[in-house]
Length: 258
Length: 371
Image (cartoon, rainbow over all chains, first blue to last red; front, side, top):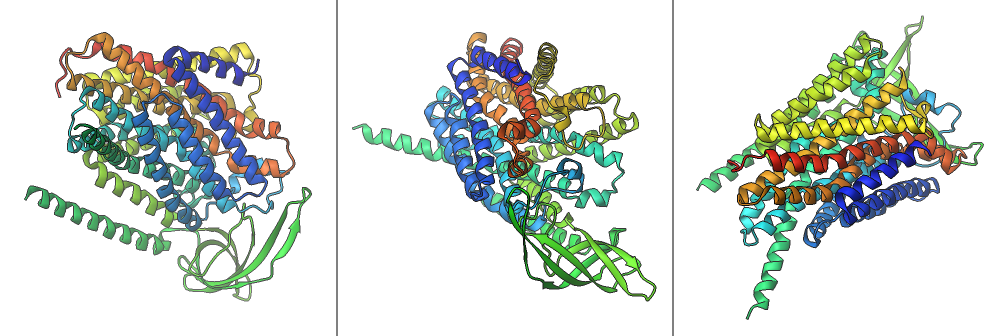
């Protein structure tokens, strides 16, 4: 048995033990997300527009991740709408910044890995790198939106009559509680993944100025920053969508009463 | 009255943030004097005709030559004008197109007849980098206020620790990488949680869960590695490796999952504390069940966060492999397999932290939570 299938099997069993049916669903969502990501790469290799492929994949990934984890209907719907809004805002930020910073493709540090590969493949790497940045933040957007929506939904369940203003405050309060650790998830996730690169920089004695202008370094840091922007924006947007949803629900409930 | 005052103060803060941002952009465009390498500002661009290229795999691309005229902004050649050539391709994987106003690092060659020639090395990227950092800090402070400041502080403090650990690793030639980053993980977690939650019972419970969950996941991973003999793991596919890959891979995984497990424990435990504050009459068992419910909702999305961070990054290289006539299976093995293994190990830590957090919170939470 290969290591990947053994680890995958253990993860599946643990997820079912801890989360029951919901756990199994989350695992399935993870598998499907991998499939979607791979499909996106294949489609781009077949010359479909990287940005359009990414937007469609992004929406599907958000829907899968959010609706296949067990939240109640209200929090899932709210989380999905909010994260879709954040995704669109984020694309509007990432596209111009990637064009401006010129961090597309590969840097001199990649030469060894690129040996024997032709890089003149006729696909715009500015768009591919933009797509990569968008895809790498998807998980963070979905997670933050779900955390806020789930926290608010718990409060609503325990306190069904909580006022809208108080709910808005609660949302920002939950956001304030999670923002520090969510940032650290991103920080550690990205820096963990690029530990080798940073060791390279110190090993080869890059100067501070060289690091600050290095293509790969800037590209990596920009990815972390995009993810952070998306998480910050997710807090007020999700809270706002939730208050709208609750207000709508209460209006309908009032109308139903004679 | 109070509200209006608050609004006005906030307006001033936004204005202040804008002014600082403008100064920052202007400053980084005029900081060439801080660099040792000569920087050239492009004032004129002449673009040649595009030539079509086809590689062995029938990929079509085109290359264009541009002649850039400009002057040096700093150093011994300051003010001297010169001309450099640059070739860019339509795809632009290893090259880029320059425009009037671009600032480039150049390598200057001195000739006998005092004429300067140079080659363009790379573009200056500090302006976009610092601008984006400023956007994040400004948004953080304006929307999250004090908590945002603490979040920023914890990331900055961890960044400094991280840098020190890397330097320490360099001075030991990478022999102790797992121990250095393993012990640092404990410091990272304690410092971050202290900054975010303050020194209290909630923080201690969260810290215990974080370290427990991460430790369990690494133990499970090592056991699986042992029994499967690491089949299907391609250490040679890791990028930028300058030292023994296996301990480096484990250190990367440890750090990567630490943040996510910390995030999750905080989410669950802070929700449980808030719940207990709202409804103090809940029993230990009800709190545990609530924790498991919250946990099983967020564990899936959280594993996804790491999955996308670890695997989406391989997009450009994987696509290049496909365009160079490699099979799907080989492309996966050489680019994505290590990222998938990392995501799975982190996932195991994240799932194990759910019962751990719920158990510790429900048992050790004070009977009456003080807000």
